[in-house]
Amino acid sequence: MGLKSFVEGGIASIVAGCSTHPLDLIKVRMQLQGEQPAQQVLTLRPALAFHPSHAISVHNNLDVHPTALPQVAKSGPISVGIKIMQAEGVAALFSGVSATVLRQTLYSTTRMGLYEVFKQKWSDPSSGKFPLSRKIAAGLLAGGIGAAVGNPADVAMVRMQADGRLPVSQRRNYKGVLDAITKMSREEGIASLWRGSSLTVNRAMIVTASQLASYDQIKEAILDHGVMNDGLGTHVTASFAAGFVAAVASNPVDVIKTRVMNMKVQPGMAPPYSGAVDCALKTIRSEGPMALYKGFIPTISRQGPFTVVLFVTLEQVRKILKDF
Image (cartoon, rainbow, N blue to C red):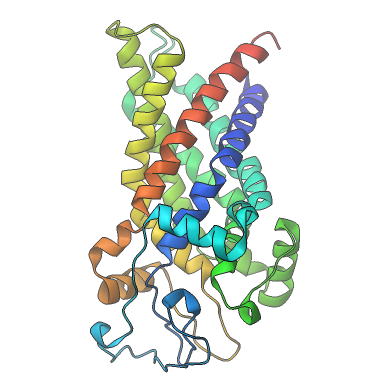
């Protein structure tokens, strides 16, 4: 059962990740909207609606009042998606999909497999019940371990998804996830592959605990109360509800994670953010507390379908592999 749970979770995660990748890319672009340059002197990017030849100096001491900084026109998910296709082509919606495959292979395979292992070991031997508190604990632990394993692919995915918003001269132009990881290791050091790892781990713990525990709990409630039989309707209902819970719980951490991973550190200059707390404070100070819920619509738009595809595929894969 141990190894099979990893295989089942991995297959379901890769299918779900690839099918919802464009929504994830739109979410990343929206989370970066309004991000103010935090380096000592930086030319504002076209993504902030300014021509690249117009340089504006912004200093690390942040004495400049947020209202004095250029205000950015916010765009919704549909508008962002259309702009991406117009500026970069339809294929741009799948920028970084190779990193998504690697990320799901490392991160989700690990977390899904470990959760099932913990579920088997921590269920009550007499009744077979798996209490909610243990589900949450299993999700937290499995998510944290999975995130630590998959962080390099996560960093590569964020960078590849965000690359198109930069001027051509500033783009990283990674050819694929392996090229991204190789260049990051060579140019920024091995440690750069785990940039934002504390955020990745925290987010993954929140997502896994809320997503997997919610799915199991809601599915059990539906079956115990005889609302529906154990079939597609139950799986879709429970998984969509679990996706909503996961999106609400994880979005603030996801915004900060995206910005920390995407930041560009110039040689001899202080990084835009010294860490997660610094990023959160600067984001709230310049854009307001609701900035932590930027990209929420595409997050739930992606998290809902992702979770539905994940668990529906998982249930089908389990049926196929039940005799192995």
